[in-house]
Length: 312
Image (cartoon, rainbow, N blue to C red; front, side, top):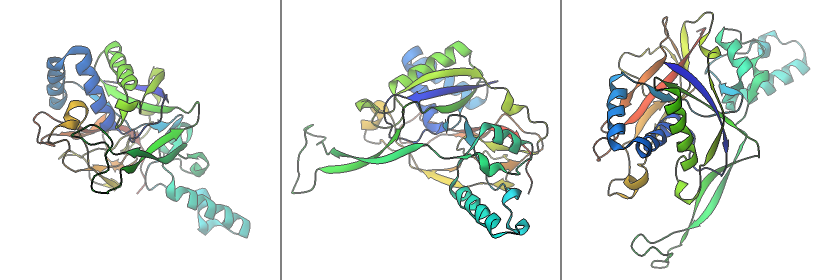
């Protein structure tokens, strides 16, 4: 398996969080458009059996990675503080850490080796603005805006906006040929990711592509950090620090207008969760099947695993 890193730049605003299972779903649709439904069915069988692999990370602001949960910055330890000014700085660091999700690559690699002293200096935010955009309700039967029985015809949806030049990093672990993988990924970002892509939302340009070797060259490790949300498999490790997320998914493209457009709720471990495992594998988690009333729908609940040294 080969781990790749792609840099993507938003062309439009987008309306769905850029998470691994969402990216995988978009990849499958682009694979179907490129090679046919039969080829996609064959690929999914290969993926579920473990003979092939295509797993995405969540998207992270350019030059960052998820902050591993539960780590402690000894440089901000109140027990070692003597002056009022030092206490004030330490308080500010703890406040920033409470809501932090990302850390720079350089600090992430230090954390991998167990060096957490001063890592709060490398914390980064999302770098996006979330804004509610107002839309008109359209009648499904007539295809027009219609005020029914005096009810309101306006509703708001959140969209994500970024500054010009803002990029994201995504990682993909795959056994497919690099040419095929990159071709499908470039198409999927061109077609759009997440909801409202039919109205031009969620389009991205792939502005960088390379094989990623540094993250898996950890000198010592006794566990891993997850690069995407994932659904644990039966034999996955359980000792760790993590948060959970319930996802209420919806089907895409023509399935979205079917009589059963929604997926069953699924519980995921959030990206950034850390687990102990003496022999770290390249990925963890499992595929979820029977998630919809429509046969054949699957959710990739796997995560790319990055080795790290965990102190508990």
